[in-house]
Length: 433
Image 1 (tube, rainbow, N blue to C red):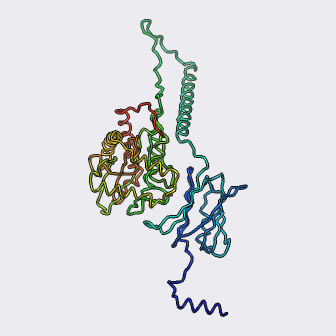
Image 2: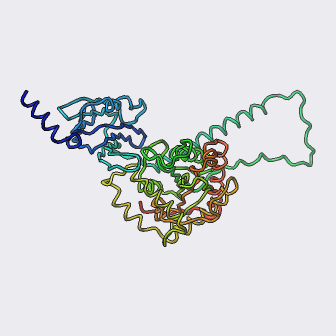
């Protein structure tokens, strides 16, 4: 009784704002993808954790200090999707007073990365668990296998069509055709183009933002990350119709990819060009029109280009980058190696793309602009960033939402890329990865 009275007296003396309390969980999120799954716990105060991996079965055990089990934290159990490549399920319990234990049951051996993020944009404190596969897939091998499979399917379709044609010829005709004149030569069957190319042409498409980073949001709620992914997926299908061309997407679902990782992915597949797709936002809703950007060696070509680059380069802070990522040091070096030749080729690519998208919609600027976009700094890959429209403009947000306009935009981007390759054929060469 005396201890309770003492605590009550102390509470009155300190006041409610001076009493140390545990963190409150604001939200829990799970972002599954083939490359990795991210689990995020957002709170109103920093969280501390200890974790370890266990086997038989595989699981990640995390003890979070300063927490009481809450309904918000229990929601994590229901956030796991059946098709998650890494997580089988989640269990949550009060392991000790003020210590909550999470057990993430895993479908495969995993290399987890755990880190915390300070408040930024609309988020407060975040604790992040990134679950990566122990062995990373070879993306170039995947593209080659996809190309070989597509060629096999095309060959099978050709054989089926040829067999059907021969079957029709074998059928007797009710009235035999007249014999050709003696002087006429027997016509030859038309030649069938194989469409085979000497080497694989790889296009890296980069849908901006994703996962924790929604990008810009339009007046009626259309999110940049959703619309640019839809455009990139359609553009991949359009480019796959071209013989010998394959597309690598830096993301093919709703998950976050750091800027440096987007560049690394393009270099790992030895991409022949890199196209980052975005949708502008500006504080004035009347701003409109598409833009194309290339990298600049000497600073931005305009104040608007500089503002746009600063905005896009801030994506890592919102999306949540792990500063201890194993590739960070290597990529920092590579980002300082961009050459004048790369920028020259990027401007050629940008000019072709800008000319085509100008035929389906309004342009914000009629020339390729330049600024220090981090995602364009692959030292050996022509790279452009396409701002498809101003999602902050009500009319252009409606266009971006329209499947018909998306299809027109995809056709224009594909034509621009095709014209660039027609005038700048890719050469056989070896790059340092």
